[in-house]
Length: 285
Ligand code: HH2
Figure 1 (spheres, rainbow, N blue to C red):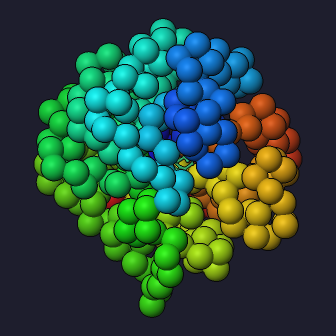
Figure 2 (figure 1 turned 90 degrees about the vertical axis):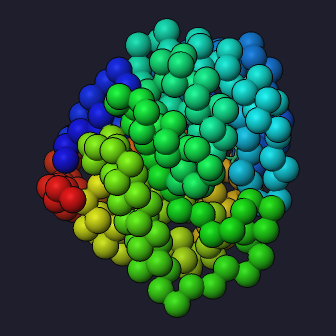
């Protein structure tokens, strides 16, 4: 499957796609508060488009470890004006939410993709997306909830367990009538995982590709990069770009990043060098 079907766009995945992050939150782990005002968030959408983002991902809930969830109404008030603006920019727009109220409003605004770190597990979420003719969806794996997920995550086989979870969620969506070409999967770097777990998910990423869906991954500025480099969150640009390239080299089709310009440049060089990604052909599930 070399494309991702979304509301308005059939996204060509033969070239790796850069998803730029717009956090309309006071408390995100790396940029909390910077784009919390509507004006700052609108300007950030324009900026990321100018930097070459292929997709904009807009969220109103921080899912950093220990974060407090806003009410559905509060979350919607944060993202609604930003989504409305982003959908005028001529590129696919994704809403980063687990909240059915927010999903519904976003789809009514014409948003293209629902990106859910809780894999559409909340009551009514699958039905909402299934009722839409073509919205795309990203299903992410998370162990536990943001408040507690980094307690002491343990897996017998992290890649096997993440893969089984994602396969089951994708199968459930398909049973509810959502076409395979609308679905991407994400191992959820840093969501209830240790440094070793995250690295194993990258090293054995081909096992997740074998599920037959395109992979989206988000390494940007995450604490595993800090653990490997000794750098605080503001100094993880090089680590983030390297991780994005490694993920693409191992077959990921979409990278979710804060630093769009640097990632776009790095991917241009990677492509010019003719480095084929592993598993160029994604099998049809
Ligand atoms: N990571 C974050 C949020 N949403 N969605 C997907 N599909 N994959 C991810 O890895 C992912 C995600 C966390 O990063 P960020 O948005 O920068 O932080 P916060 O949750 O604190 O707003």
